Image 1 (cartoon, rainbow, N blue to C red):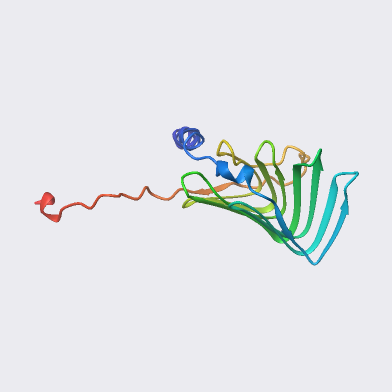
Image 2: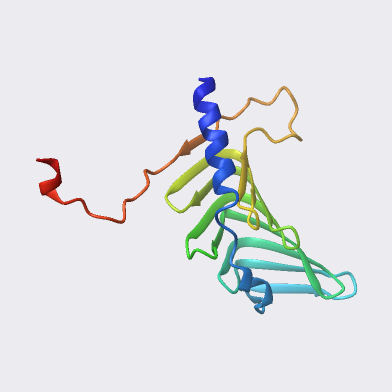
Length: 178
């Protein structure tokens, strides 16, 4: 079992430096659609309800209730509740990262996406499921497992990871096997 854990650690360490969130997204405008909105400019808080859709470049966030917190006209945090709430973004390698959970929080400056309750993160062809996942979209680092804010009496949730085999880009000549 220890050998498997070492492989997983090495795999996650390698991919943490290989893919980054689309860097051009940072300079794109933020678009929001919702059934209703309440914007408190002086407080830097806005609340959107009913089939809310947010886009910013390749970033797509959807949910039933979304709170956006900004400071000095700069986006700070997006909190999303949904059935499920969803997140999609393309990285600089044009690979799609998608996630869903009942609650998520996206911290814009750090690129941290926190998924809670029935969380699923799909990165390329790899799939991570847990009740609690933290994904750094800028550094491509995934942490999954028990929420540190939970008490010891809560039943620990398992993490499941499916790693797809690497796809070969070259075709073998059938004559080579003879």
